[in-house]
Amino acid sequence: MVARKKRKQYTLEERLAMVKDQELGLSHRQIARKIKKDQSGVGKVLKRWNKTGSLLPKPRPGAPIKFTDKMMHEVGLAMKRDKLVFVSDVIAFIKEQYDIELSPRCVRMHLRAAGFKPYSTLKKPLLTPAQRTARLKMVRKWVRDHIDWELVIFTDETGVERVRGAHRGKVWLHAGSAESELRVQPTAKFGGGRVNLWAAISHQGVLAYTVYQGDLTAKPYINIVKKHLLGNAAHLLRRTTGT
Image 1 (cartoon, one colour):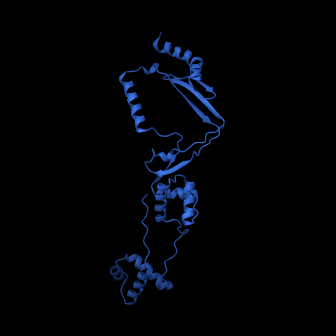
Image 2 (tube, rainbow, N blue to C red):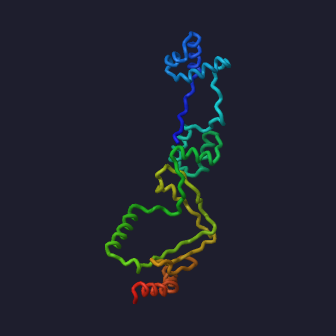
Image 3 (cartoon, rainbow, N blue to C red):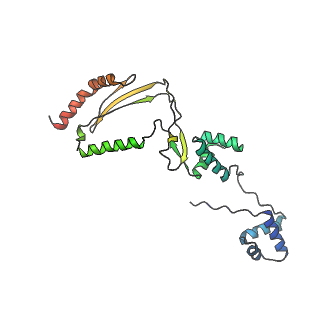
């Protein structure tokens, strides 16, 4: 739905000029043409004058606007300059600069209207152009070598924090900034009940998985492969090749 354009209010000088022209006998149409304004607007001003004797505009419904578009433009510049990406930071900036208290919901509404978009924070840096090129080169080599993917096994490990030590909220950036470094937030390194998981998968599904403690260096990795993977890998080879 297209938002209706707000009509600019007449100044006090324009309203006084309308009243003077009316007293000279000019019609609403003639006054509107003379001052180059909309006839319906001129009519409303003069009808209110004739009825109440007041030239002040009628109070608009709803709460008065506290946060203007100009303020939002200045906030947007400050967000880019000072790297303000969290709603709480924006609220604090508005309070400090304009002495206006806005709710998080109101701030999010203004940010969306100004072209900002919420993105989830990331714990790891994004791939560099060199890393992307190297990975793409590796994948293309695999395609050229016609690898039998039914015989390929993928392994990986991850850690799950039972107590999160990093701010995992939303950061507000201009739309199209999904790869911005501002999405990467520092994490707190502490013992928060971390659970380390290792798993191996193939085209047939999960082959093996286990929970381990400490760092996964070469020695514990080899022990995990011998204990949990070799038997399943041999079974996968026999079932795939028929040997």
